[in-house]
Length: 288
Image (tube, rainbow, N blue to C red; front, side, top):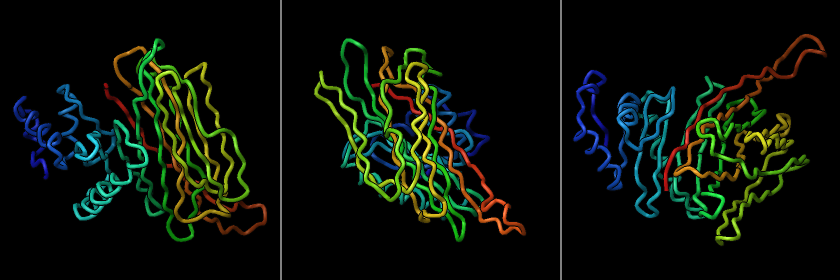
């Protein structure tokens, strides 16, 4: 269903209006709304997430798992937006590998060079004497058009920027140089409460730079993809483990995709590619 509310009407929305939208989400309906409506929900204190810069957002509580699921899109065409939302809902069926407690999809449209989807999947792992523990998977998928290639996927965050109690405990994968596509398993375990989460995927031909600094709560994974030996569609899935003594999880990340367009210069020393980087800011907040 679509929340049919004009921008002029947002200021007149009452708590009953907000409750009606949230009840539709809780019931398992896919609720689609312009960004100004979803921002009004968030400003009113509702547990609703929306990305800066998006045009539309969608939300539902996935009936099979009870997972809160969000989508932030910069699509403005209703037909393409509808296709994007349908693809997003279909993708939720793949959550059977690991069922997150929270998931949010973000999109990047790179001005004719390509596009990307970023799924932030967060898992509550349990609590012990050190606090509450969370693990987050960042599934980054880029698609390049024509002769354009993908050069980099980067995910980074200062995990304690929003909440000083957030501590970066671990980050994956480790530094690796892959001469060919290889299978990587990313795994996090919290043994004293008997909880673990892992995922397996095939990485592109690339150098993986784990530049995280746990003592500074700085998380950065850079996949330096070989643009001369990459496919039009590439997927990376880094992750981390965080603990906190606060009641909930509150982390903001930056995800960047660099596309490489072949440069046909006159001289041998001219660069092979022109690089263009597109970024999206993701935000994950939820309380267990």
